[in-house]
Amino acid sequence: MTDTTEAPVVGMVGAGQLARMTAQAAIGLGVGFRVLAGSADDSAAQVTAGTRLGDYRVLADLRDFAAGCDVLTLDHEHVPGEHLAALERAGVPVRPSAAALGFTQDKLAMRERLAGLGIDCPRFAPVSGIADVEEFAAGTWPVVLKAFSGGYDGKGVWVCASAAEARTVLAHGVGLIAEEYVAFERELAVLAARSPHRQGAVYPVVETVQRDGICREVIAPAPGLPPGRAARAAELALRIASELGVTGLLAVEMFETPRGLLVNELAMRPHNCGHWTIEGARTSQFEQHLRAVLDLPLGSPALAAPVSVMANVLGGDDADVYDRYIHVMAADPAVKVHMYGKPVRPGRKIGHVTVTGDPSHRDPAELADRARRAASYLRWGKEDGV
Image 1: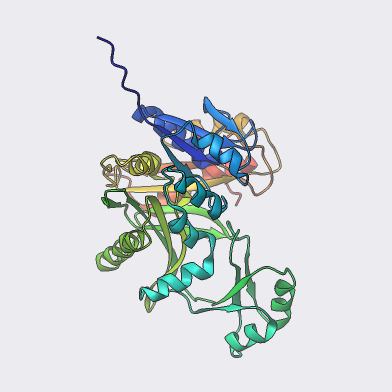
Image 2: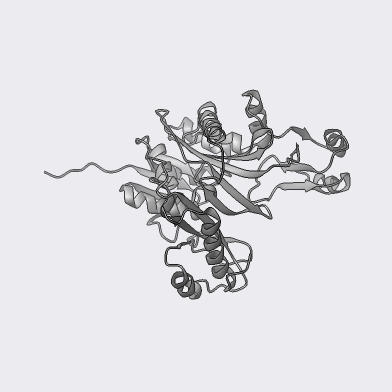
């Protein structure tokens, strides 16, 4: 007797590194996986047999892609919300939904919704001219200006030390909100997963290290975080996922301040703050996202090692990264290298490395140093770069 049962197919709109790593998780789960790519050279298109070329901004391309999938998900937030809503009306399961995703596409809507739920965020206000910014600042600078939509890795965010700098930003002609400049102690992040049947799971809180608006390192779990504050962060992530109706992964970026936790940003997809989970958690964020959007029971988010440190590999001046593998792997055989198949450009995220600690090597500072040295050598050909 022949079994004709077929595994479901997940279609991911976008073919960057997040889709590439999700494709690897799909292989392990034995589910179908396809990507909608803008180019055959895109990171995930290079490794995914089910690649369809098309434009995520064109509804017809999205319809054609969705026709071969059982559920649609995303590796970025830039798909027009009205297109996703049209797919939903046509019966396509889109996870996260267009309504949920709208809160990551519009920072003002996100801030207003969270404030309405009584969730602490930086003080904010929409601004349309310099008078609005100066009224918001009330003589206290700097002030942070953020574009309503389209920002990532520091893009669309400006820290203005004066009204003159704010005028320059306003001249861009984009919708903006003003936010208080938060004197935080450090930045934290929490990943939560939620399924259509409303099962939830949350990963340990991590510390993220940002430089020039780009996440450079992630330490899991966040060192020295009091248990009560860690529990509060996890509770916030699960509550936000539930209140916004998220299906799939939700990344919640937070500021740790003397007065408590402030929610800064949201993302509804696998996230850079969760790359460490490939080696450092019982279930990687990529497998978890697939489980969630397919409404499978969620996997354990528990630590697989006492401490994990992930460092992003940025592009340097030399494109021949592979030539430097020998040194990195020989110098520290425990380092795990993940490269994304992306053309090297200075400052561009082209991969990451992860170091995990066994019970006798759990010092976050020592692990972070090892991860930094490996990432630096892959970028610059020397271990003391930045």
